[in-house]
Image (cartoon, rainbow, N blue to C red):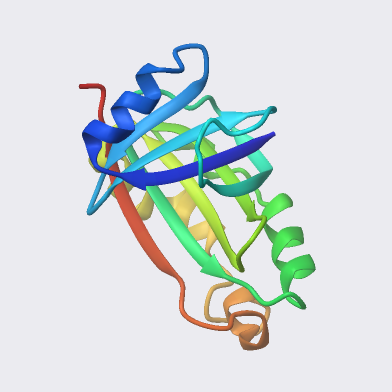
Amino acid sequence: MKIYMTTGTHDFLKTIKDEHPGETMVLMQGEDGLLIHESEGDSVFSSPRTYDILDSSGELTEEGFVVCNNIPVTDEGRPLFEYRFTNRAGLVEEVEGFISIRVLRPQSSDTYVIMTQWKDEKSFLGWQESNQYKKAHAKRGTESGIDNKKDIFPRSSYVTKYHVTTI
């Protein structure tokens, strides 16, 4: 299973989505418009960013708030990074307002994406304040934390946030 992403204006992306009603697609708006396409087949986009889905939970829906943690990883760091995320505790799924998660391996860049979908922004903020979040990130800043493995991260990670749109 793969996720394909493309960016553009809301109207342009909505046209693409409307032309493919049988496909699983979610249209979002943040600083830019983003359209994601989840499929076992080929992308319908002309120039997609392509990701393999390493881990997933929940179904993508046409509602809510999406947070993408974009994490650059060196080639040498990929096995450790993927091991950590494919063996995650699954605590995020316990939080009220959680809809879905996708752990995405890039096919043509070094930046992995951890994409979570929430009922609304308040649900995401609730996750960040939850005991599950504290437990999931308990090793952060410690010797055994993956963030302490500086040689696997070539540069800083960054977060992008979107509101799902249906109009």
